Amino acid sequence: MPDTTTDYSAVAHFMRMDHWLLEDAALLLLGLDPRGTYFPKRHFEEGTGTLAFLDGRHPRTGLYSDDPELVEYRRRYQDILDLRENCTHPTDATERGKVRLPYFLRWAESKGITPPWQQWAIDHNLWLAESDETPLRHPAKDSTGKQYAHLLHLCIFVWESLYGSGKPPPRSHGAAVDQLLADSNIRLGKSELTHVKAVTNPTRNKAKDGNRPKNWVAPKIPDPA
Image (tube, rainbow, N blue to C red; front, side, top):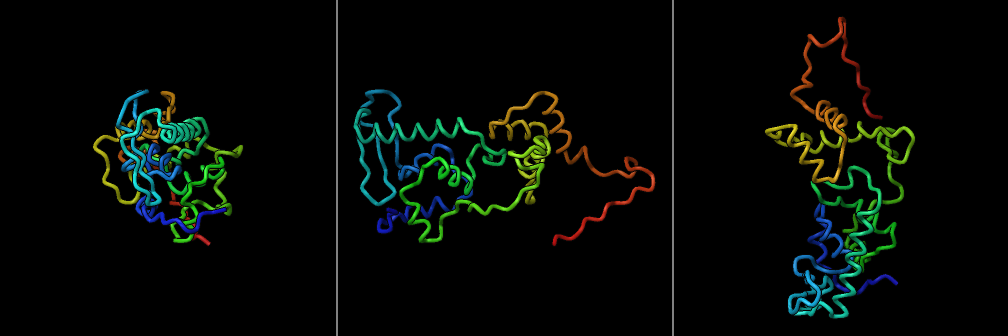
């Protein structure tokens, strides 16, 4: 039965965000507040473990590394990280190394991971998970289709990340592309990387009359229906 009585108002702060750090996301799915939760790094490290709950309970502090509740939460936390690492995700599932909402919540649901605060978030119009009625995607951007154009999709992602929404251009286009791909855990071969950098470089791709065929006419883009 969904929990409709517990006050999870601490969740509201996180649901206003567009992205979560993966480690924070795993804790939030478990009903833990990442701002106060800490797992000891070494086995038998004493007095440093803390569980901060999102449901208003007082945090449990000074926990031994073998405390049963701490061990169980740490196991479930690691399970989420392992599952996320070993699943296939679209290239736009992360941005600058952070998981994107609402995709992450939808993905977690598909794997049977439902945060205890989900119903509270729904009741307060804060649940951001994508619905099943997602809009149709262009075949070139649908990673599950036969016409998926990986490099085209990647170039769009790079362009929007570096130059979209009026963002100030980076000092070095090539270095910015390298950093973006590294933060997004995207690895390319040398020829692919060269292609992506060239296609998404606004300085290199400025329109010049001398580069246009004779009698060239700009194509008319139809208004959206």
